[in-house]
Length: 213
Image (cartoon, rainbow, N blue to C red):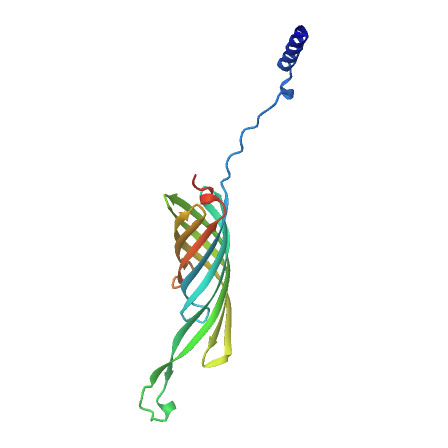
């Protein structure tokens, strides 16, 4: 019985040793770690804009921006902005119009204009990590829609759509591998008097967006 078992073991070992490479068990190398990561950016921003009537308005809007890190800190995304703006516009009133004679030069009054804005943009940026901070630069381009209504004449409205192309910088603090808070500032490259500054919170699906291990 012992001789039979020994003979069987020798035959099995010889069969394994003579097996072709295609018959051997191949252990595949481990897949490299992913370098991508998606996050959602929520924020509020203050802005100074010209909605199309040649005047500058103070505005504020909320921002929602889903982003995806592609590789080595490069990211792409989209952004939706929804907000409002307002300003006091000077109006000259002549003395003659007030029945005080024609020698006066007039006085300055003001009318209050307000409006709403909405924008849809595509975003591309590059970000670098440094400890608990990350900083980056990004470009955002798309379309903005604005409607202006004068408080003295609510029936009179002005609607305008225009392209926007912004250069922005951002700085974020990583409170955890999945949560950031940060600030963003930028200007429109075509209309330099239009600027924006915002604060935001980022929710990251992958730890550090796979930018740090």
